[in-house]
Amino acid sequence: MILLTGATGFLGKNFVFEHTKKLPIKILVRRTSDISIFKNNPFIYITYGNLTESESLDSAFDGVKVVIHCAARITGRNFTEFYRANVLATINLVQAMKRNKINKLLFISSQSAGGPGSPDKIVNEFDLAQPISFYGLSKKMAEDIVIKSELQYMILRPCSVYGPYDFEILKFIKLLKNRVYPFIGSDKKYVNLIYVKDLTRLMQKIVGESVFKQKIYYVSDGVCYQYDEIIREICRILNKSYCIKINIPASFAFIFGLLNDLFLSEKRRLIGFDKVREMSNDFWICQGTEIHKEIDWKPEYTLKMGMEQTIKWYKDNGYLKS
Image (cartoon, rainbow, N blue to C red; front, side, top):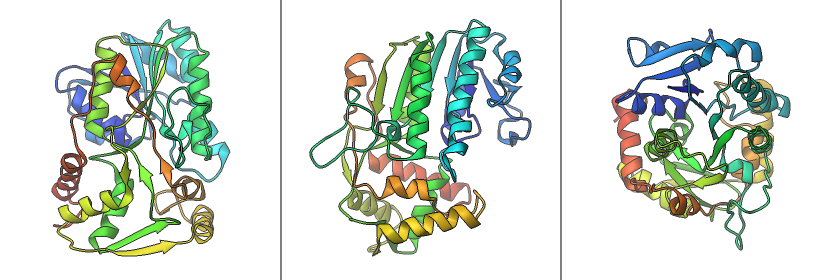
């Protein structure tokens, strides 16, 4: 059986619901987590533990053969918050796995761990990692822990993931619905994307076929998008013929992010200083073809298909008015 951390997050929810169409799964959650969405599903086994407390994890491994580590903090006010949730949690999980003789780990890292590209460079798995944010640095440190763990592992670095339950991109879509397109710095930005169902399908393939190659792989849909392409597609789906571009200077965005961090709770924060670090860069592009060569997997969803399904889900579930 699989043990999944981060089941209450965006990617975790999508993986759980996709996986349990055919097979059971065990999820590790804190006792304070809202797990109402998982209740009454006989294929979901709930176990309680806290990744920041290593001893609390031992009871979770009964009947488990492989662990998928999705749990992560993606926003935070300082490096300490990221370290505790992303680095210390990974240390504790690896130690608990070794104590309980579980040796297969699929670690979901992030493109942020490798850092952005440049006009002359598309980043690949063989490049020296150069994270530019606290989040990216914490994910790179977590990767290093996994690599040195002596476990059988796979590390995925997904680029920007979107799909149902993603409430970060929802904030942006709501702005576009009101015909507002804010961007930081240059509007000539480039990015890779991956629809969440393609990513969960890859994760299922890895654990289902026990493909643990002791490697890091970038994951994307294989297309390099200019931001304007994404905006046009979202506006088309929303039936908006135009949006007003609002350029936010990077210096102002950093101040705004800092004020958000200082005075707003995490749920109310629109954007934090650490996220501005990433968004002010123009080239979040990576070479994601290595995984196609070594694993029989290719993305199925185009931007049009994935974004249509995402926006439909928001509307069907009351998060976006028609």
